[in-house]
Structure formats: structure tokens, C-alpha cells
Length: 23
Image (cartoon, rainbow, N blue to C red):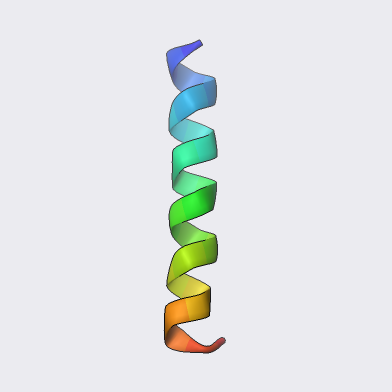
């Protein structure tokens, strides 16, 4: 589903962002 894809993409974005910011 589109909603599931958006949720997965958003989650991956958060994970990458946390790694980049070193949080």
C-alpha cells in the first residue's frame, strides 16, 4: 500500500538522519 511505503520511507529517513546527526 502507498501508506505503508510512505511509513517505511519515513522511518528509513529518520534512521539515516539520526546516524548523520550522531544522535
